[in-house]
Length: 400
Image (cartoon, rainbow, N blue to C red):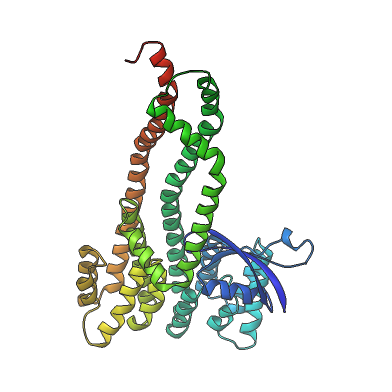
């Protein structure tokens, strides 16, 4: 066994790193994927030069790989030849090596889904489940194409949500940087000037000076507290189902941003559910893997609870109408699909609708943020400037 240093992206799009003792890189990737990580960079500790060629398989790689494999299989080319060609045509050494390993496994009589299970860096459980169903139904090329489409749309949706989250965070960082510079560099100049004044400073000026002194003396404490709080929250989120549920529930109720997160989660759920049903997966077998694709614990629990409803002979949408986790439009469309036998079609329509809703919501939040930024920065800078210039204005007789 060896020690591997890993870096990956968690469910929230944050970069995480650590070390793990394992037999090989695939074991590390498999364990990380089960914990919800993706976009892995792994190197063996102590291996010189290895970090120059890290293992990195992105979602775009997976989309392209599945699309190419679908075309080859659809052309009637034998699977072993397909993976030989995939290895030759790959522009990444890691993908070429994986293709050859899958080809060799198939040559030993192993099924494609079983061979894919040995390559967790490229194929997740959702993909393997669909391929297993496709092997039985004989529509492998169709399922692979649908998988590629699903992953491509999921990737685009994730980027939209990330864009919506990144914008306010960047604005906040810029505002804090400006605030820090004013407190540390500008305000002290006025403090030195006012020390020579034999007069009581206005309350606004005293407040700004006190804030400046606090920032200069304790900024590192505030920064450390924020970092510790974020780290503690991250650990609790990963390890405690209750903390994760409560936080996800709070995020869904957050103004503006909560709507975007909810619409994105519904789109992911509907798209993955539709893809599995279209591949011929029984509805009861769909619910557990589909629930995990939502990316929000509140929706995951709601989807998982629907399994017992179906086993009791009730409709899929009945528990969702009772707990009101899903909007009425979603439950109505799923109800129509369920009662007419076109559930996969209606779910796909739901996914398309909410994809468009996320697009509109992201555009709206960016449009709303622009005036908010102007007001925020104007109030912050204006308040500091007025506070520091107020004694000078009073001395000049401009302020009574």
